[in-house]
Length: 184
Image (cartoon, rainbow, N blue to C red; front, side, top):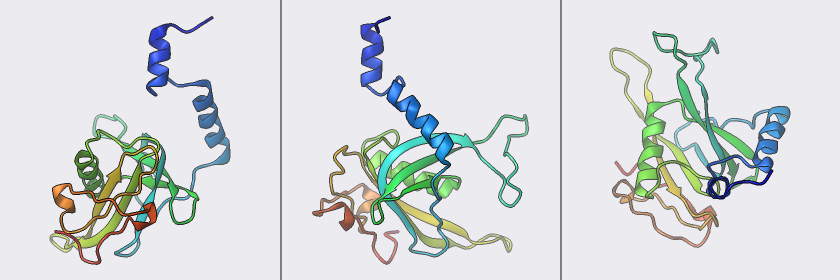
């Protein structure tokens, strides 16, 4: 049975799974999840080309129990798989912190995008700690930049103007850097 012109248009726009993409899903189920980025120290960063983005049910820190709202509805968290630029390895970026989510959303908005897409380049860096209130643990502060170019178009430099949405074009993806001091 042949596809309708609407199905072809949706598939070409990436809005309908292709046979190849369904095999990719099956392959990832059998091969396991890529290792996660860890943000243990200020300056730790995730830098890579987006391979895919999806959501999964969030887990409680410490117990690994599924997180739900009071009514039992699952709490979802975004996961972005990146082809790590320095190493070439496939890595997972779990966007469980609202601060990280806001930094990524600001980067996407500055780039004129609604969400990360395959082939785009994403940079996320743990840049500071925000003091906790009433003795609570300090919260991690993140900054991010995103280049939507499918050809990995070598630009993203978070400098002092990054919060205004400026994205400059150095000569290579490896030039994607963040300043030593946060731009805010």
